[in-house]
Image 1 (cartoon, rainbow, N blue to C red):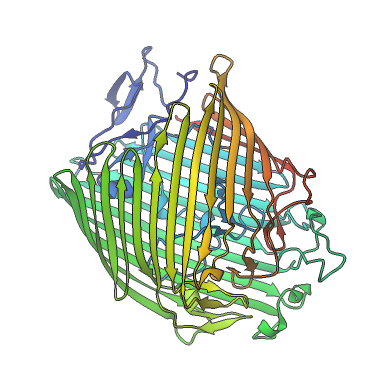
Image 2 (cartoon, rainbow, N blue to C red):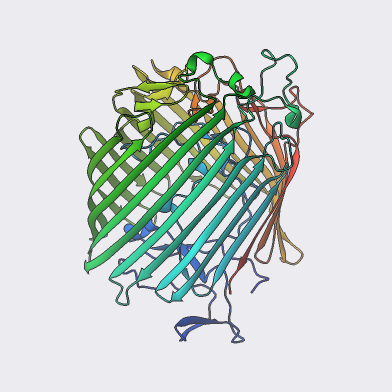
Length: 630
């Protein structure tokens, strides 16, 4: 069995009965022995593998559409292991794993109510809503270790096991240890240190009427800020693209983002076609900024921004929220329906606030999904926040086209409305932000060509952003964002593939200057993809190229942990090529990646990802992932 290609398709069942089991492909026999399901092959040998340690997500349980996913053993995109690379480089960061990020393209917010506003490290946090819950027949362990050039390292461990056929438990553990890519003063002079873990469990009653999913997650993310390279116009001895010898602004400034979340979902089946459910969520985000103002770090901060003259700049924001959602749902006549009421309350706490900045929010909403056939579906969902904010969303899916429409009015963040830092301070009364978004995708499949032309249109009014003075501001007009694009995948011969994504962006309107988006974005990958040595080794070898046109990318201010507008630094166009080798032996995957292969062959010495922050230099990354199923 270990010599055969592992299945890459997901096993799926759609049923209102959570106790129904999914048939597993390739398993000859099942019986019960001591409360554990025993799996036998033709030689009566117990066989465990990716299809016996399945996982699922809360959102599918809520929609009465249980999808059980086998473990991922594919090689596609395996070499892009860090979160920014996994996004196909659609995030702007500070040139290192774990550094502050923001999306390059405009994104609709997931929450229309009040959020903290501190989202620079969201990409590295595994939210409870995305937790994998397991249905495993044996103890399961996944271990991944990535050793990036320049001591940029990540370790991920996941474990799950069944207590009995209806009760599974598990935990996840993640670390990042990323040495500074610019001006490290020692081998362990890390820019980023993260330790995160989560505990999770799921339980089904014997009669299948009750289901409980619960998890606790915690992330401690520490960053030793560098502030970017000192521009040569400020210090004539400072030179770009010297990397470890670069002269940077900061050496005694730290940021910390501590998050904790208690989350559970449970439902009870009242009768066929009707269930009631409850979701509880308790989030806490504690943010701390520290800077030694008796050191040379003070040169980075504008004197006119300083509101205090203490030796240590300290700013702490403590955000907490509680959410309870109660609703009923079910299936009737082939349609899924859901109606709910949701209550959120929380506060932002700061030592300089006279009183906590509190909020209480009440929502009502629902969802309707009609699956007309295996390939045709229609869905609509929405929620209304009393008063004044709402979101409605519709999706039509067919074999040839997907069409999607969203209209939303959402609240500015807590930090945008009120902030009291060591350097900057403001109190605002911004209006809610309005968005209309239309998306469409054509599905064109030919013998060896797969095309997905798409078009996205956003109309955004009252947009809140951070201006040239690094302060929160609200645009008075609207912005129109047009984004035609295409995903094109080609099979060349039998063993070569060419995958491409191209996005064009045009921003117009009175508020267009608040959006800094490259006009052209390209991601292209050409690679050999084939099994070798009698199908014992699966190999991908190729070149990964990314490119965007030059633009005035947002700068980053460490004290507020926000990206803001700037008009002086052009993050110029520069193609970056990475050479990669992914291979799998049995269920063990290995990656070898050489970053920035074209370094030294371009007119420029290197590239920037954010003003005064250079991208990766040339170095080698290694990684390995393996599974244990007993």
